[in-house]
Amino acid sequence: MAVEKVLLASPRGFCAGVEMAIKALAVMVSAFEPPVYCYHEIVHNKLVVEQFEALGVIFVDDVADVPPGAPLMLSAHGSAPEVQAAAYERGGYVVDSVCPLVTKVHHEVRVRAGKGYRIVYVGHEGHEEAVGTMAVAPQAIHRVESTEDVAALPDFAEPVALLAQTTLSHRDWAEVADAARDRFPDMWTPGRSDLCFATTNRQAALAAIAERCDVFVIVGSANSSNTLALERLANDMGCPRVLRVNGAAELPGDLSGTVGLTAGASAPEELVTEVLERLTPRCGIEEISVTTEDEYFPPPRQLRELLGVITGFAAASLGAQPPDGIGADRLVEASSVLT
Image 1: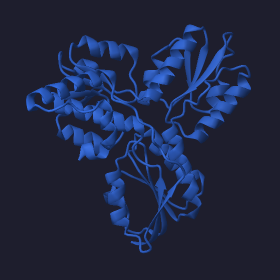
Image 2: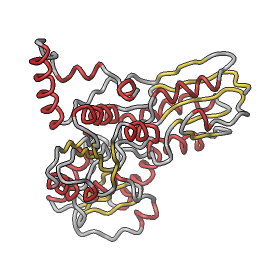
Image 3: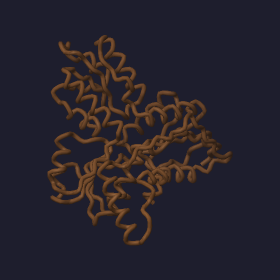
Image 4: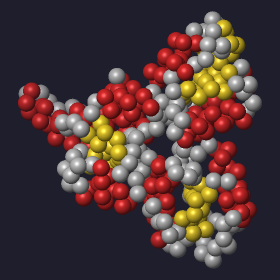
C-alpha cells in the first residue's frame, strides 16, 4: 500500500447500548454453565458473535429453540412483547439487554397507540429493532422507508404520530419525516429525537473528514444498520472510494493517498487497531473528534440483582468486602471484556 495519512474519526465504534449488552452477556457466561442462549445476535457484529460462540453462547432466532430452564438473554435491539412472554415462560434465568433508547421508542408506541393514534414508523423492513417495535402495537403502526411509502399511506381519520428506528441515518430519516409532515401537518412527534445519539455522532465525525479523503474505510458488519448508514453517507458526500470491511483481512492492497477510517456502533476497537496496522500510513494518523461521549447505561435490572448475589457470595467466601457498587463496571470497556 501507499497510504500517506489516516484521518481517524471520533467518536467511532461501540456505543453505550452495545457496551452494556456485551458486558451483560459476558457476566451471564461467567455466572452459568454453558450453554447460555441469546435471542438474536447480541449486537450486529460478526467478530463479537463469534467470540461469544466460542465461549458457549448459542444464538437463536426462535425462543422455542431454547431448552426449558436454560439461561437466556434478549438482544440489544429489543424484542416483541410475545417474545418476552415466551422467554419468561421457559422457566430459565432471563435478562433483557434492550438498549434504553429502543425502550423509549417502545414506550412511545404503547402510549400513542393507547391514545388512539395511528403511528407512522420509519424503519428498515426486516430489521430486528423494527420488527420488535412494530409488534408493540401491530394494529396501530404503519412502517415506511421512503417518501413513496408515505405517499401510499391512507388518509387516517385518527391523529397521527411519527416515530423512528433508532439507528437510521439522519439523512434517511429527515427526507421521510419531511414528507410525513407535509402529508400530516398536525402530526405528533416526540420532544426528543428517536435517533440514537451515537449513530448521529458517528455520522457527524465521518462528515467532518470525508472531503479530505481519497478512500474511506468503514469497519462493521453488513447486517449493522448504523454501519450501512455510514457507508451511504460517505458515498453521498462524494468520497472517491468507500469500503465497508469486517476487518483488516478484507482491505485491498491498492489503497493510497489519504484514508478516512471509522467504525459502526457495534464494531470493537480492536478491529480498528488491526486496520490501522495494515494501512501503515507514511505520515501517521490524525484523530479528529467532533464530540465527547460519556453516556453510560447500567446493567439490566435482572443482572444487577444477579451481580449483587455473586459479589456478596465472593466477598463472604474470600473474607473481603464487596465492591463499591454495580456502577464499577463503567470503568471496564466492553472490548477488554471480549478479549
